[in-house]
Image (cartoon, rainbow, N blue to C red; front, side, top):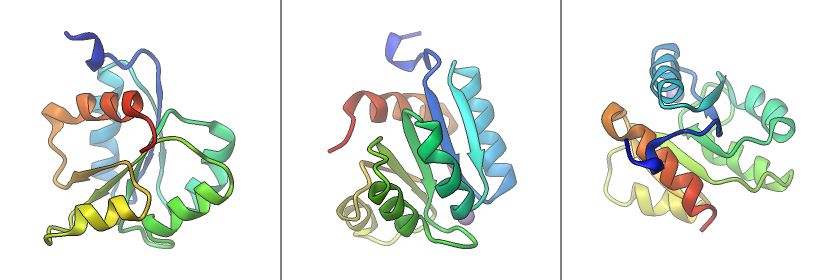
Length: 130
Ligand code: MN
């Protein structure tokens, strides 16, 4: 396995309200050597992530309480400066660009492509903030 696909114990914060998606992402990343914390709501993410200092945040855009774009803005305001990857089922043209304009460093479409997830997370960590 190429070195860039190995998690190497990096910590991934997964903000996802859909339990099945959260478990899938968790299991795939753990199998690739990542440590993973799952936050089911925006509020959970805002209370946990600043102290946890993950290496990357995967942020579902559609959350039940605070949407992912606002969660990211709030995280940035509290000094969380890690790469952030938007995860969304939105499929309209231009979404990727508008998410990147909102401060996300990358974008993953749902349904998640399990085969490339770990590599995408590895590049997000490697490339850092844009
Ligand atoms: Mn959701």
